Image (cartoon, rainbow, N blue to C red; front, side):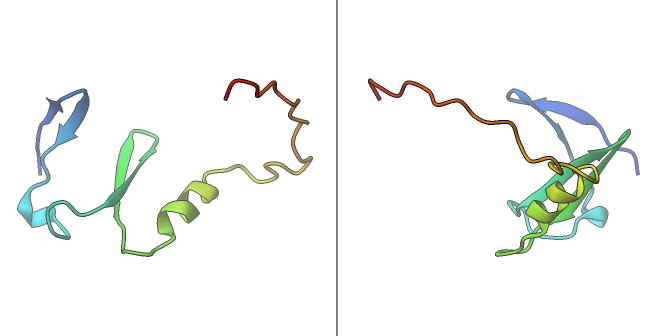
Length: 78
């Protein structure tokens, strides 16, 4: 199905035809870019799917060597 991208405030938006919908309006979804494809996943309340999909994006061996030391910062005036 063909649809159109349009500007909504400072964001881009796309109207999803009813035939392709999978939930109610105002439902939370996860959007991910895979190459030239946008993937929209329905999120269920209390689900960890959004966090898990972000972890899957890290390359194998990510943080295998730990992380660099974080120098202490001057926190006066906070």
